[in-house]
Length: 329
Ligand SMILES: Nc1ncnc2c1ncn2[C@@H]1O[C@H](COP(=O)(O)OP(=O)(O)OP(=O)(O)O)[C@@H](O)[C@H]1O
Ligand SMILES: Nc1nc2c(ncn2[C@@H]2O[C@H](COP(=O)(O)O)[C@@H](O)[C@H]2O)c(=O)[nH]1
Image 1 (cartoon, rainbow, N blue to C red):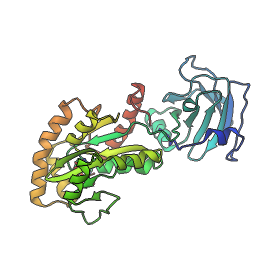
Image 2 (image 1 turned 180 degrees about the horizontal axis):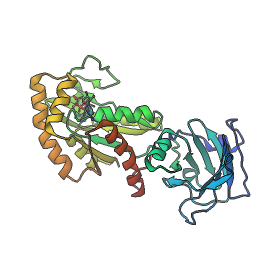
Image 3 (image 1 turned 45 degrees about the vertical axis):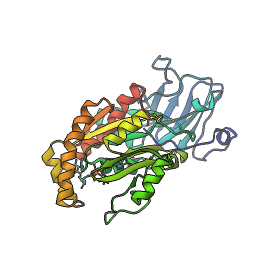
Image 4 (image 1 turned 180 degrees about the vertical axis):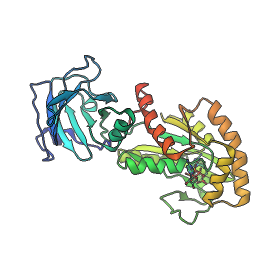
């Protein structure tokens, strides 16, 4: 869901606000936050559930109260909250008297994600997400055959949620493509040097893919998690299998093409491989798709037919995964 920057509770609880609008009533179990013509009442248990506090909205123009659909899991009822209006249609809610890892929450009331959900559900929607305080959340491993659109989907996710996701920059021994920059798209590596680093235990996983060596260094994953972002790994199925067997607790997503013909067309249209390399990638794709679907490694399998639809599914499915307590973003 919303972006979850690292935030210091001490700083906020000592009375510094962002100066936009703050109303904190420690003795009241509900707080009200005004944004434009609306007042959000946060904290009551309107839904009568003990899992998540309620949210009600008052619209000044119509003088009506209504209960929105509340996505995600919010904080459990508490004795007091503080609220701060943030940019991008989000409210920071700090639950008082809670352990630090339970104290920071974000209620998205008009973020791009919530606007999209409103359109999809045709109802008023708000969404909870939990704050990240420097602790890395489960990384996301995205696999699928070459040319299926993994990189495209990842770019869309990173563009929409720039402060939430960070890309793990892999090492590879293949030559850079014309638009690729060392250290951004890949760390382009010498084979002997990379092999030595693998031997020295510097890699979380590595694999020979389409005739070149690729690998995820521990340093690359740490660089992302240290920045407080959720790490995304774009790796092949062999790499996903290795990560699955490693100590890294991750979420695994496999992307399938609508057909082999479409995969071939995409690879050709991308224009980055020679005919021989395209043929090799297509041959490997068949085995990868079989393994991706049947191996049981992947918790979510997406078909990338229409790009926008697939991206939507990637985002909507996270709700399903949240409900299963597998992922929260
Ligand atoms: N749903 C889609 N419909 C049509 N074209 C698409 C779709 N998704 C991605 N593409 C295009 O297909 C090509 C391959 O996409 P992309 O480079 O993202 O694949 P990839 O899975 O990351 O490949 P690789 O594993 O080789 O890095 C790109 O030109 C991209 O613009
Ligand atoms: N096992 C790993 N596979 C990786 C890694 N980085 C990328 N890849 C996969 O390689 C293919 C080809 O990529 P391309 O950039 O040459 O088109 C693609 O399917 C990637 O998922 C890695 O670190 N480890």
